[in-house]
Amino acid sequence: MQNPHAINADLHCHSTVSDGMLPPRDVAARAHAGGVAFWALTDHDEVGGQAEACAAAEALGMRYVPGVEISVTWAGQTVHIVGLQIDPACPALVQGLAATRSGRAARAQDIGEALAAVGIEGAYEGALRYVGNPDLISRTHFARWLVDQGRCKTIGDVFGEYLGEGRPGYVGHRWARLSDAIGWIRAAGGIPVMAHPGRYNYTQVQHDALFDEFKQLGGAAVEVVTGSHTPDQYRRYVDVAHHYGLLGSRGSDFHGPGEGRVELGSLPPLPSSVTPVWHDW
Image 1: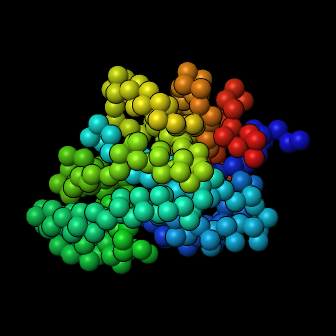
Image 2: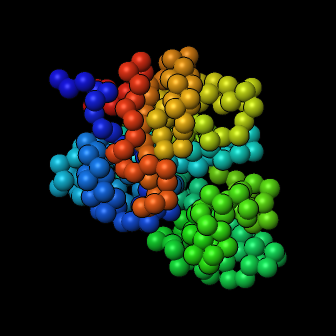
Image 3: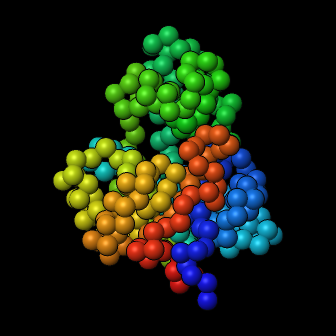
């Protein structure tokens, strides 16, 4: 039996069904080219790409893992919970995701108005040109437009100058509750995973309270090796996994060529001291 730590698993990425740049079949092809063996498409608050992703992965000989990434509001900030091995047709999940998506269109129009107020006209219409699914318009679509307009060099710069919290184009949104997201994933037979926790701007007390609640509600795993974590954070979240009895996950959080720090399949292995979420698959 193959050592689970030697499996190249990439269990977090996005397609045009949410805020990625490529359709699911092309993300599958890129994952395969990167040597991925276990692959999950985890679009934001949407499972509409699952059938295409699964068919493409299986045609390429990859093990497909049905997935989703659910947006949660916790202590005034947005937290993401990945669900792996879900049933994409589960009514509780499908209905919950639809409710979570429902506020995005109005929020996007508010972002456009906020940017117009600081002299950037046409941002909403511009962002729509980058949207594969209008129900899932997001700040990333505005960021791509602003980069192409020459306002900033990178998407990260856009968030730092215009779209991050406290910046002129930031508009908050009330997402699902943590209990909702974990409940929907569990109802769909899935595994709730705390996504890229090193990105969240919480105090240590808040951080610990988030993981306490996550574990109490049925959270089962944490992303240890991700596209947005540093090597120090890999080690930190191995310790968190041990402390809370969580499995470790791994994923690039790929959105498009050249947009992230790492390519599909190119992350370092999950540290051997943590049990992979895929250990018994």
